[in-house]
Length: 566
Image (cartoon, rainbow, N blue to C red; front, side, top):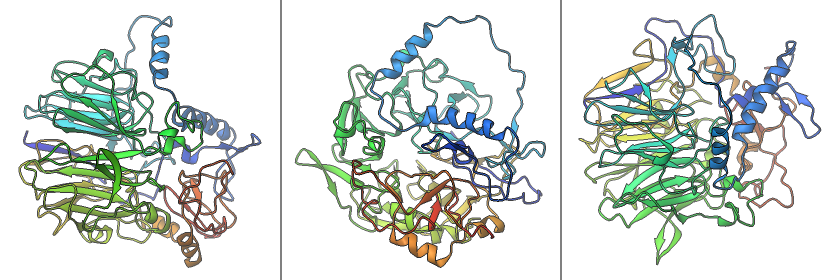
């Protein structure tokens, strides 16, 4: 294949910059919420009156999302049982007719959604694309966050759905193996408010012509009700990084159960003594797997919750048991700085790359939580790793995100992908809020897709002579708009910054119903440094840190904290 499709967001040529809109980190961010007493609180900005009936609408949206994204542990097999029951319900025959087969123009002046990137310059959009794969015959496969897998026989365009017969439409990863089979991992792992669980992994033997069916599932119900961030192949084994640890399965015999390779806190898994704990869903998160191309038995697991916990770190087998290790070189290995991690290796095995997000920076740095982009020039995932870029270097590469409060990696906990050119191990694309490119293994960088730009009305750029294998972008299809006004609203006082530096976010973000006194939020999604945990809740690294006053706060979406009079 001679082209790679980059899904971008931006302004059509010659268009004036749009009015600033708040960044959107999930529909729940701007809906009404109930307190323990059952009272509904509207999160309108101070001085704004709630329009008649809007609270009811927001509450409906809130209940829709909470029923589908509520954290917790659901036993394997429950999803299959519910799906089987659904198939047995009476139904009406016939076919639905699409009456609105029109592209969605997010910048249409006739429609403005204050809870999204509407008017941000992205033009025609779909939703976020979580997985992409391409072969050498012009076929491209795209896995949408909540819309299943789609196939194009023309290198992009004329898309056809090929997973509508499956019970779960949420995409975690999408991969072609060396036999041409398409692997579909269900369950989106981007940790947003609209990331939904899946029903495991499915394999399509003839992806150019066939469609996924329930009988294509690998193994049994072991991976039901999980999210899957990555599938990796090594030898005759496929590895899955899930929200319940790391699992493996044979790639030759697709029947039989998945094997649990490692879970850092197994008592929090289904059936465990702590499975009912409020934090159970956050105690066994795996982000990625790095396999030594020269020896598939040498494996590194990137484990950890993006907001920080004691178990965060890198693991490998030592004497037959998984143990935490310290990787050599510049990459961080401590729990404070190992958050969301993405690996990618070159086709010739000469280089390994990694993106590393830092929970410590997420809690204390208002500009970015990207610890860095790293490269192992030995080709070994064990290193030594050298720093190829930090957020300052990327900001100087042509990025549009250069102002304090919104710099490259501000959403590194959410936006991550890596893709190495299969013909050139020094040629790399990385995806954060923007797309960055290096042709010399990180010595220099450019920003071919900065925020607020677009190369076509559809917001998609087809670039010739790019990698034959498509990227797996864990990123929304439209990037986050920003402006001077937006940056100003994100400015913290020095006292607030100092207070948050002394504290940390909780292991699982919390959101009070209303902003603390003296602060306002542009997105109504607050996380305060001051936390209260019940005596029965497990102690985390975050909970043991100093807790400043509730007035010192930040937001997970836009990190704005300003006086109400600002």
